[in-house]
Amino acid sequence: MTSAARFNGGMTNLGGQYGVWRRGRDTDAAFAQAVEGLGYSSLWLGGVTDDDLERTGELLAATTKLVVATGIVNIFTIDAATAAGWFQRVDGQYPGRVVLGVGTGHREAVGPQAATPYQALVAYLDELQQAGIPAERIVIAALGPRVLKLSRDRTGGAHPYLTTPEHTRTARAALGPDKLLVPEQHVALGDKAAVAREAVAPYLQLTNYRNNWLRSGFTEQDLADGGSDAFLDAVVALGTPDAVAARLRAHLDAGADQVLAQALGDSPLDDLTDLAQALPFQKA
Image (cartoon, rainbow, N blue to C red):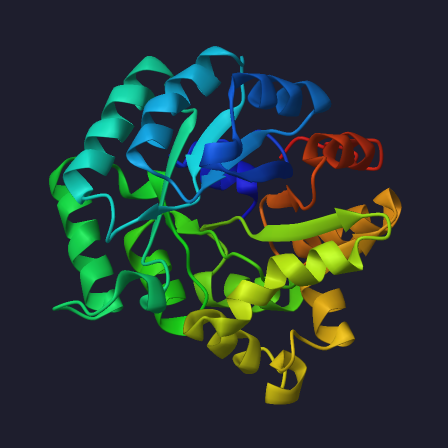
């Protein structure tokens, strides 16, 4: 099934094949306007706080068609009632331009919980459903097979983070043809290997990411000492705009509906501007 058919079936139309991922605290209306002006179709906010949720209205008001999504709402830091209330309020003002991305975050960050992360995620989805949030407007930050299956069965699709085109191919097979798949891709234009390594290093300490990379065929040696060069090249798109654009297209070829560029370094908008020159911005 094509992405257009999925959208016609009720999923938010993301508008095109390329979007941007940016931490919520680093995003403002001017950034959203610039992203839309460059041709990117969506803006996904990471590390979402209550303040970030409130600020989404400003991002939507400053743009005309840009889809704004949470990538993600952490189910352990923002309760389901708050997330549901936000979605209903903002989607009512800007119909079809909001996606609710949810996930469990990192086990190391949330500490001991009464329920397992998977059980807590299922309960959270139950609450969203009871609040009337359409399942097709929710996506899960899914990496492993169990949560990808949950994404397929209970929501509109999946939003994997810090993965590879090979993972995108696996995720598409797990989701089937009818669900939305929107992976995030770290990008670093130019000679920024050191920046890329610094950005990836914290994730090498997190169990869910390590497990996913090991499932994907990397070895413990690849993940040791800050990660091997081959590992870094696999998870971060480095180099010229054309080289980075080719990596983004590889996700699309592997089954993604849209791929999100997270530009690393001190001048993300400059990199997104240069990258935009190498992207076709075909409509989905």
